[in-house]
Length: 102
Image 1: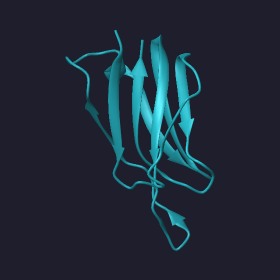
Image 2 (image 1 turned 30 degrees about the vertical axis):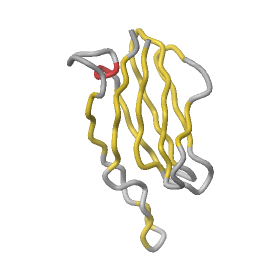
Image 3 (image 1 turned 45 degrees about the vertical axis):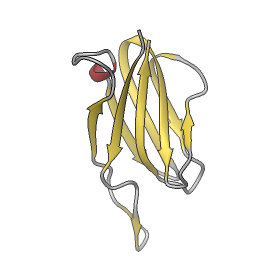
Image 4 (image 1 turned 135 degrees about the vertical axis):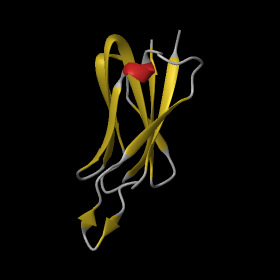
């Protein structure tokens, strides 16, 4: 059974005077029931030269999707065991993320 979890970033990687604000993420499950596999994942968004969404989920395959400031959504290329990430294009910040597990 697949579960999906959406995470929104409060700061969305905004840059002010060359200063990138830290990401503050809150999680809201979009699948049925609490305690799902996706809810047990550690999820975070970082901002270096591009927005990146990461998820670490023990014992399951993981896919990650990141919504970027350009309005497009990008996903990890394949299912990976335990950890995965998705990236925005260089210079574009991330605004939210979602995680899918199986």
